[in-house]
Image (cartoon, rainbow, N blue to C red; front, side, top):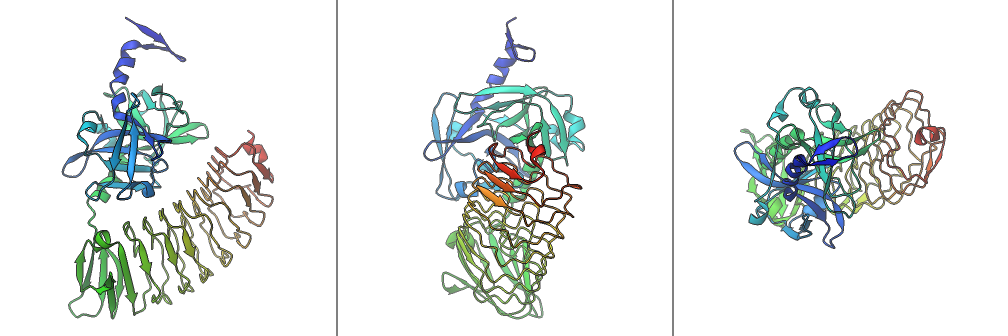
Length: 486
């Protein structure tokens, strides 16, 4: 029997050979210029009524902007052979920034020959108890090297979703499969990145549930009136968007549309809605209209609206929004209002009145393309929740929050998480006396060189991972330097 001496213990050579059989399912993800973005793997997944083969990786490796129709994804195997996947209208694809995954259906015959399988026990009630005694490996493409692997075990699973494990990884491993070597080398998670003491991934069941939901959505808008024609209802993907009492004019490519039409969003990519009656709830109004490229809302009457949460969430193709005519005097909830607007480069909120807002959590989360954001008119006196407000605003170069009043805020967890491009943040005006959660607040802010937290009170704060992967040369003003240098 042949043996290889590993760092921790002697590993049977036969085990190495067994792992190597899975290598042909795992690829480097490349940009169009063939720059390495991360790792991905081809896998068979079970939908409600059939199985499909997909490429899985992280959202922070391939976001919604990279999987638009017409885009080309390049992948490279261990033999350094590059293959191309062209995103077409008939190819299923989806992504989610919170679960940090991207899924692309594989239809190329030469890529269907080798694929991993999902572990059948992922539907168990307590995944940690199910998997805590198993051994795992992560097969990855570290840095610019050829494929490799490292082994270890699961340390904990939080909320049956986030997996923490003691398995070593290197830069370039994001999107790698977490493989159970005790159970036929099946996949139970996707590796996301480093998290303070352990590495972190997402449990595959949560991702499969989300994929199933997105796969069976229909890209259609249906407008219906009740029997007495007292009001109209607008449905998008079988979810009610709004209800109005009198009239609505709906136009597509300057042509008025009657009460029902299918797939206009995907085919024409332009939708103009004029509302002539008061609304109180615009929550999820344009949610997941991922092919819309423009919206003219100049005639919106928003005087009585109280809820704008998720209003433009997952409008992945819109590049600009001018909401300067919006009256937001009565709005209390703007949570996830612009979340996952990946392509948004211009956002005019100059007329926003935020006096009554209590929830701004995830408001700009996933606005990957915004380079600037003017919030100088924002009144945040009543805001309680700012969790992940700027999460994954990759391109934000600067952010002036000197006017923010945070006296009532209790949650700032993940507020600037993955703000890669920010070089400085002056938060000396922040009052954090009531804050209890700053978990991952500045995590992965790689470019920060100056951070003023001089007024921070952290006596009652949960600060797990607050500075993980922060620039080590970052100058922190305040009493938190001890935490960063632990």
